[in-house]
Image (cartoon, rainbow, N blue to C red; front, side, top):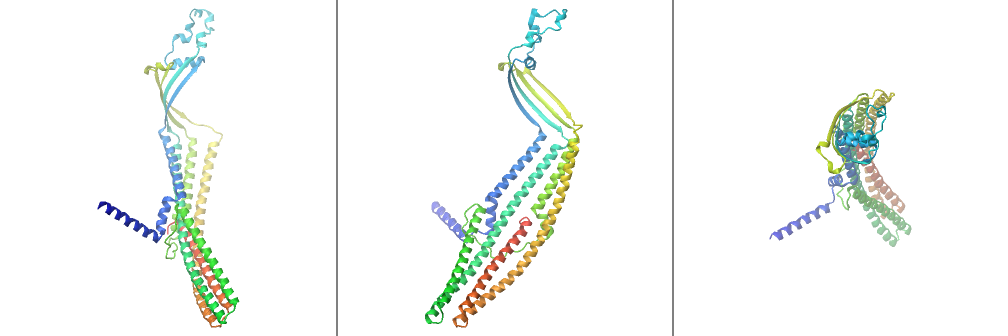
Length: 456
């Protein structure tokens, strides 16, 4: 029974999945897939993670560095050999030249002062092994470390905004593709109706030719128009296929069927001030201004001293088997370094940072005014396109009625085939013109959403 129950559950799940897939992918579902699987968004996320790692690197400087240093050397240099023995605590009086024994003049002899001990100047080859643990810590850097850490955080914020911009762009492209598909389907539906009417007209014309009420030239005109409509339909269906390919690219998976939006896309209800507060480009410009201002503080740190701590412990020996704790040593100290003169380079560096900050501040103001101008322009274009769509819709409705009227008149021999074809051409022209204007309107509405960081 458990096995049967499991099989039944699995079958129902598969049946439900089939039903869901037959309904087509919705726009909301596509956007969720886009956020998870789009390759450009993934790349932007990796860039953000890289920026976060760089920020952590800057902050890590506050903790200093601890290094393990292993030295192995062999030398016959007198200074090095003498130093090796002192460091490893193996120096003896013999290393000072007393090993020469009887060849050393008496201290009362004047030549004693100029005597060159052979055992000191030519000590022979000596091995040296050293293990050292060294720790350095910056105690004060004039605010440079904290400044670079803040700059790193701002760069991280900038990269986060860049990712938001990428997500915004991809959502814009996905939404536009869905609404383009809806318009294409509507246009295909209208052209298909026109095509069906032409097929009926073609049959009617053939019948009228048989009855002697029409000429073969009338049939050729109908067939030419039929071919023209078929060509337009083929082009629209090819564009539909291209849209599916593009959606598959955006979502990083094969998409064969979607559920197109049924309602007209509405223009953003945000005010210009709200759009400016949400716009990613402006946020990036403001973050860039934060970075420039912090760079002024960092450049002023060159006027201040730096203080650092350095400490180490070590163990040395002349032979690997002779490592002893007694041979170990330590050293610790603090260093203050203060540049007192650099030929004016420090002041010029500060001035450069200050001017760059002023330049960026101007660019932020320019970005705000530029975006506000774009918002006003897009809104004006949307209003104009809305009016054009209403007008074209009425013209399409009128041209359809005129065509029907002329079709009846043609059947009654009150209108020529040429007149009928002209009216039908006007009907097709209105269908294509309406599609073009609706596409333009949707593109402008989505462009306005894009300026508001993708929010509707």
